Image (cartoon, rainbow, N blue to C red):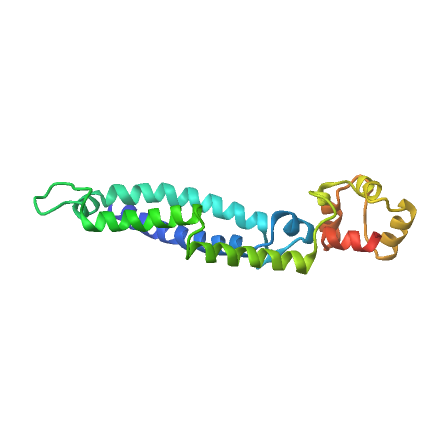
Length: 196
């Protein structure tokens, strides 16, 4: 049992670090449509990869957080006991911990400082990526087949084929821009730049 208690604490620590790292990455990634259009990656991982890792690490964190509370139930309860050894929800430490958490939740919902600054900086970073990569011509353009994309953008199909062939792009008209881009090691945005 002692061994599993150590595993629990270490797993909780690692999942906390993983969630912190992926949380930071999700804080700075471009908005979804920009990230997918430009095929944004950092350290070889996409926005979707960071989101998936963050989600699964959260599950591990919750699961082992439950075990951690179970193993540390007595100390946790003792933090809430008053001088008469009775659990008290008015104990200073309990109220401070509750206040800190409520402050950040309510402060975020009502755009209070310093939460507003944190959110504004995140928004500024996302706007930077929009300026850097530009916006897709329409939402989820990268998921459109090349044929549909060309038609929707009113691009001459023969000119588009010629440009793709000249640039050595392997494609099939029924494939999505995303599929074509991945097979050719470029972004959907680059495919658009070639054919526009």
